[in-house]
Figure 1 (cartoon, helix red, strand yellow):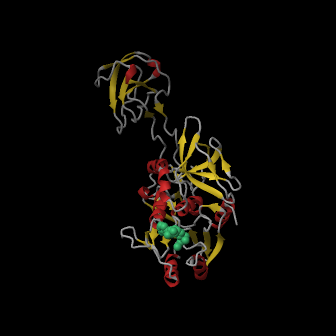
Figure 2 (cartoon, protein in one colour; figure 1 turned 30 degrees about the horizontal axis):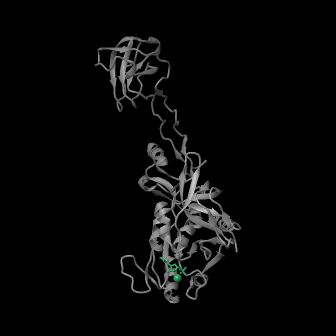
Figure 3 (tube, helix red, strand yellow; figure 1 turned 60 degrees about the horizontal axis):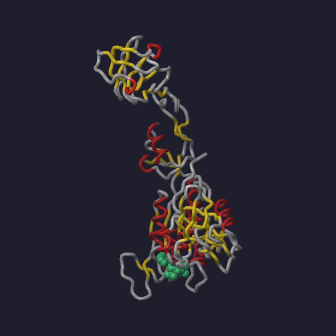
Length: 406
Ligand code: AMP
Ligand code: MG
């Protein structure tokens, strides 16, 4: 059986960045990846900008009483050139008048006075003080953000400032989630004996949404082979079809055979990981991917974290890093069978100098409420049976942890 690392390698080698690109409104861009360099169409700042409220001065004038010749709020462009012995009132964000070379903050003066009155300048200054020079951050034509940058709120601000709206991005993958199992009913129905509500479909959709991705729901679908095949075929035109359930060794686990039949090549099936051993990953001749996640809800969410998230990032060309941390166990963990690498729901907390990892109450991969108390996963390597309290472990956070471009 392949390891988590080997499975990831197969994913990374199979999924390439999409070549599809499109223009979308900037408001919809968070989570997408920039499709071409965003160029600065103006200098930034576009003029010598005051960074404090105060008086624009000629620094060689020094302290003294000077006539106020202009009032310059933000949004107004100054008309009066400063000459020695004069000052202009200026507000944060406003353009510096010609002739001035510094701003004295109002706190270092006798306060604001009206136009034509004398302002008392107390503070000494020096050239460039309290001024952000024109083009300090970017000059016209500079690459504000390179193609390939994942768009987060900080990138949205830069894109807005250079007028990238609409914005040219790599298309996000199309996704569909198909929950399988004869026992499943939709969440808004009351289960009859033997039935359970479909929780994997909604959680997969929520995980995708957290990444800024829309995921169509195709299920739940029963285990009847004909119906299952039809549902899988309905999902095949998506870049990623994410199926939950029906991939293990039960006599109703028909997904692997049907996937082969409809044209997906199996790239791996079964990984040495707990939970999530039956996980399947495949690819169709037209370059579309399928994940078969085990039906147990913890397995399906953990496997999304381990494999689906990096695959989706790879497709979009977004940087991905699991961002593992070292953490100190607040309690011990023992296991008898140490064959597989194991992921345990945990509460990771910063203790001033290191992370601590508190395992939350967890009865196994069907116990999905355990994940609501966890913000991370502790990783127990294959071969390790005893993890004493106080020992250092590898851990990773759950959720959308983003690695900015280098
Ligand atoms: P399977 O992988 O199909 O053998 O399912 C394993 C376990 O997960 C069974 O107990 C299922 O009832 C449960 N399960 C499967 N699919 C879902 C789902 N969509 N939501 C909640 N539980 C599920
Ligand atoms: Mg099933």
